[in-house]
Amino acid sequence: MTTTLETPVERDPEGFFVHPEQWTEAMAPDIARESGIGELTDRHWQVINFMRRAYLENGTAPSIRTLGKASGVPIKELYHLFPKGPAKLAAKIAGIPKPRGCI
Amino acid sequence: MRPRILILGGGTGGTLAANRLRKRCGETAQITVIDRDDRHVYQPGLLFVPFGLADPAKLVRPRRAQLHDGIEFRLAEVERIETADNTVLLSHGETVPYDVLVIASGASLLSGETEGLTGEGWRERMSTFYTLEGATALRDALRAFDHGRLVVNMVDLPVKCPVAPLEFCFLADWHFKQRGIRDRIQIEYVTSLDGAFTKATCNRELSGLLSGKGIDVITEFNTGEVDGAGGRLISWDDREVPFDLLVAIPLHGGAEFVGRSTGLGDELGFVLVDRGTLQATAASNVFAIGDATNVPTSKAGSVAHFEGETLVANIIRYLEGRELKPTFDGHTNCFIETGFHKALLIDFNYETEPLPGWFPEPRLGPLPLLRESRLNHIGKLAFEWIYWHVLLPGRPIPGISAQMRPGGKRLVAATMERSIR
Image (tube, rainbow over all chains, first blue to last red; front, side, top):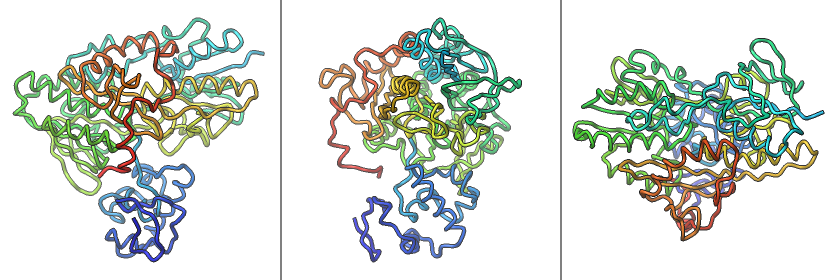
């Protein structure tokens, strides 16, 4: 599916990017608004940038636990910044595929 | 001089790696296994202990006895690995040099990482079946439990055998029905995932089984705190789930010494390896196998078994100065007990999710995939013998290849769905 964003990009039914390379920083505020986040602060960006870097390095999106340990933002605050599902929401805004637990 | 192959950990992965290497190398390599104790636990059996279906004492055998003649076994704690010097530092100060190192130190339970979990009520109204002690404590707690809310909580992935928490729910349902008190007990499965299972087709099948048995599922619940005295799970976003008896699957991490060794592991202490070759990112003469790695597949004995072939072939290639081959495909194979003498079987890899069909032979089976059957349950019970007599000695299981075979799987569903709704 395509999105309301100006540049058409391919996203899965839940709104996650299928091709992370199609993402640009300028798209992040729009995706955030879709998900009910009004304004992206520096703390949001710290998480978004960490998320993207980790994905590009490892090929998988970090879990909430990894975010809490390594992003520099504690888990409690992550829930304030990205309510309900910080790892999922931050991944969506960062233009990377949905974090998957490995089963 | 004979190359020194040092293996850290004498569990499933370490034992089968040592035995396979010994078979391949004979006297041409010196193989040493180090572990901190001499107790090898048959971990798949732990699930049955709380229900009185397995005797805890019978699940343990000496590690040393599982290793072929000619393999040295040493009892010691590891402090850290110095990959730059090709040495392992033991906690009593001794330095052990190696030419090739295999890290097979598994996954550890980090119960203390969840606030309150090991506090008031631990091993009484809160326990885990992931250790022998915990499973035994749970057996006693279940015997005394005759009404109320039983909550099974998987705090977060990764965990060993991620289907085991679901199997526990199924077996609990069966257990209470046999005792004639199922109507007085509510069973709830609380998970950090957004479904009972991460893969779509399998999630649908398992969700159907759970609801058919009257087991409630609470998803996307990330436990931040456990209040043992008050009988509550509290999530990071302040939701609460009350319980009378809690079966917790605590957070897991790699061995502590991995975290103390520079550049070796990820944030959770799992060894960073190439997912196809099993060679560590940190050094070309370091490999890892089983639960100790960060490969994106299940932490399960079957995975260690399938990895064994790739690991040993690549160690030989490394020693001969040849290029490694990325032959491990993420192959995983699990029986899922569903109670009433039945079980499901799933078979998948990095690319292919668990699908319905037949295993190991297309059409002939005899084991049906992703469908309850008595034969699968018998397979699960037979696996204990296979574990000690085929898997640990490092023999191939007849008819079952290390790489997943797509034949026999109905692939239709996979292309229709990419994610869990």
